[in-house]
Length: 24
Image (cartoon, rainbow, N blue to C red):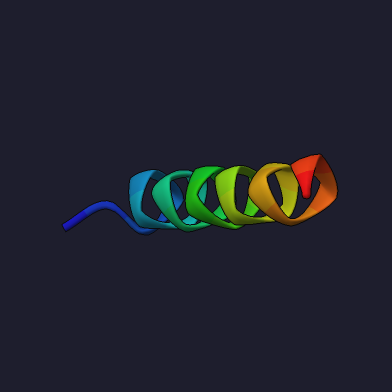
């Protein structure tokens, strides 16, 4: 398992959530 990949996926998820919150 690649830690960097997991970290990138986690950050992408956070970014999407933040974008949704900001959109509202």
